[in-house]
Image (cartoon, rainbow, N blue to C red):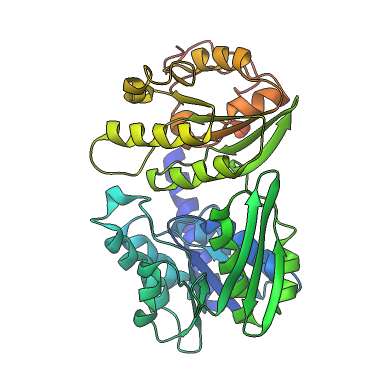
Length: 409
């Protein structure tokens, strides 16, 4: 009976969302996709448009179902819809853009996220490119000039093309940048003859792409570069996506939402550029790669050891780096259970440390490390299949479970 009721509710919401989309009038519809930085770019774009009336932001839930939910919640006053769109499998993008009917399409970059659903990065680009193919002739395709697979999408659209990046011919061009925690990312950007400094709250050079994409989208809507930059300056990093926490003299930078292999080096670069008495990197599960796992973990460990004084691997894959232990006996550590990891950290971490956490969401739940410093964490599960972050879990600070469906140690 309950399943029947849920099915009716689900069907009714889908029908209503479709009905409403056909009847609602919006001045601009901005769809944002890419292998990484979608949510952040979407949030930055909405902030860059803050002076425009009726900006509606849809991010986080980026599948066709989630996008229909965004339409379901859209206020009648909305004039500009900024929506994150996933292309995590072949038919997802086509289904979403058919519903959204975007006038502006933003593509950030092509990487290896969800590679198991595709044949190659080029195949991923085919899926993401369905966004720009769907744009009207009077629309705008916002493309990353520094990513060849994205830049090539200019030939797949009839819309006006606006490029962004470091490339000399980019329409929204990066002139210079500075970063290195505790300094946040600061950019100097030009559009034609206009040059603007863009201070941000972000840590690390890799967020440059999202900032430039947001500026380009705002430019397409007619927002002056300086005004867009002022909006971007107010945006904080999304939770557990390189956001910063300080506790008892220690600084934590947490990137625990996902950890595709191709993003590991840019995380290491953040640590390398940071200024701190001692640098610590904690790795959970590395994802989205093909071939042998051992070699990938070993290369990641070697790269991290060049940037940090202490490197820790956690979880069922932690022993993949054990061959390096003899060369780094006092700098490289592996722990298979969360209880062992936290016992070590309690004695190892100290004031003045910068701790960078790189992990894969529900596979690791390593955000518990930083949440524990705000309020003691009770949960010590090593394996937990819950698909949401620990700050939403009722077991985090509460009583221990009287049963355990997953191993505790």
